[in-house]
Image 1 (cartoon, one colour):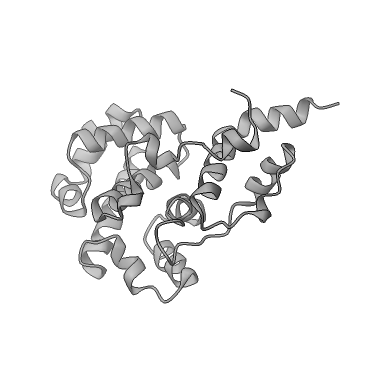
Image 2 (image 1 turned 135 degrees about the vertical axis):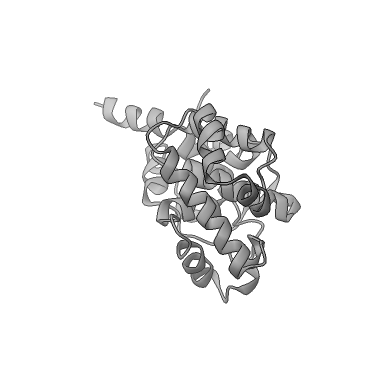
Length: 204
């Protein structure tokens, strides 16, 4: 695939690749992406994260109540183990359980409750990162694909996005980052990060 501005602006979002349509604005879609973001945010291959998300979906574990009913041990085995987690399964299961507990206690089991109660984009990010296990990387993964759909979702792009765009002669700062066009460009750049970095290192 030739990487051009046009092809990158038509890239599939990570959420779309998992069958999640954030454009519906539904609680189910947003929570599904929240689970997936926690998997993508870990020290694990993207393919493993995607496979594990599919297992969560097949098991019907796409709501805080369902996950809490399933419990910590069930998340580890069979869910995480079938997905390919070995070293980090206990830590990731604990993170997801505790995140669901926070949503249940503080936001009536609604991930969209964070957005509803946030005063502005900075407050939304702060609320998200106050949840156990949600660091800057996971918060960025979750919020960047919600920029076009949540008014208060507006995280700054990771510095690497501008660096990758520059390799192709694209000025990432020229885009309105709240648009779906920019979200697709961002997803495309990050998906092809290794290819672009190799191209840079191979340049004379």
